[in-house]
Image (cartoon, rainbow, N blue to C red; front, side, top):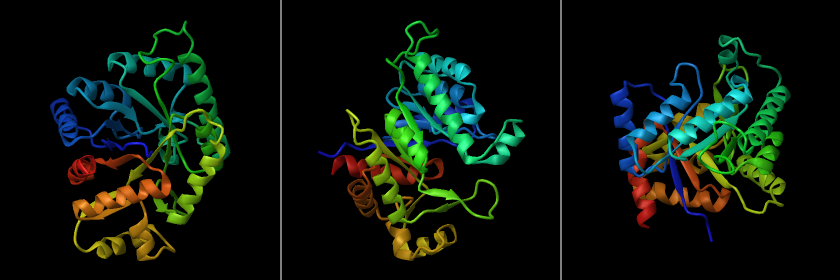
Length: 296
């Protein structure tokens, strides 16, 4: 039987305290299961924002989506994670990745390194968090035992193997740094390549006792009758892909509410994605889709 859907929203825009709490309550009313924050310079610091989100709401879990491993000392991060989990009543989900914006590391005076070095840092962080947070003597202790759920995000072979070994949630980006483009600019990979990445993960995870939840971050949600017009707008971000490829891609959900709901179901069937996240600008547009998927 297919795993049931969960829905998250990545809240990227800083607000006043009242504005932040109101936005979190609105996401809860729309049916989102998880309130998420990224880890970029220029946005809110993740853990205070998540504590405030939990205090403003009753039902949703809260999570990082995702922390840049290079920003964090593992011992200090373990303290942040445990504190946040305690203060939110055990609602935290911890998302980790390698980071993909070189300029942010440089602005922070932190090493960037090669792709392999960034994965090394992520592996070290995961191992240290596992050791520290599951240690019964670690103080403060997290509310959830043996530790809060771990999400690992990425598409590369080593990151997928790491997720297969350690993550409760495997998150797929479906994009990569665009060659020659400004720092942090991404191009979509094709649906076929994304499917291959999921298959690669599944091979690495074949020996798991319990399968992980598979996550995908939707880049755009458009309620429109002209789906191909939206696909043409996205063509510069998907070089080599046809309009049909773009319309098949889980990064784009477009059409009427029922049509989008069918696309989400199709992506669950093709890729196994059941934990679906959207970016904050599409929070309202996706709300009716959540209702449709839960009522259908």
